[in-house]
Image (cartoon, rainbow, N blue to C red; front, side):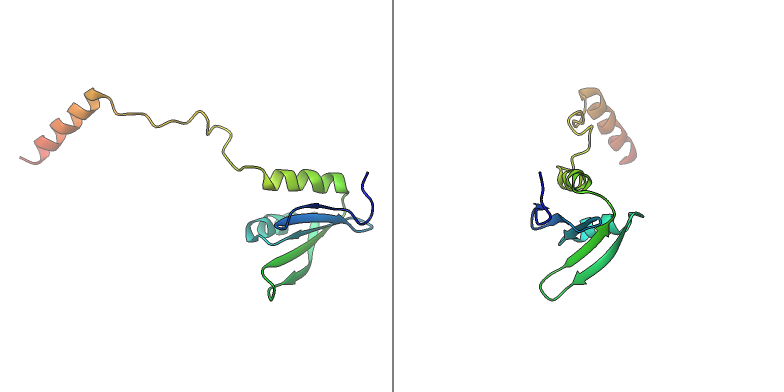
Length: 106
């Protein structure tokens, strides 16, 4: 159970309960850009003197904020990255390339 003073996240992206709603704070330009593009929130504070800082307010709950932080901070490897592997050139394609190069350099 979370209380009114609990925060979740880390130094880059964190959230805390603000009745009503939740505040999400970020020090990452990438996360700030993603948060600013959402239509259900608004930028309520920013700072630059101590480093990049943006604070957004959303009329949501802490469970939503936890899912948002998990989604935003998860490893951003494409879902098919495990299936992608470089295709080594075959001997036939190497011979064809050599033939074409010698043909054009005559």
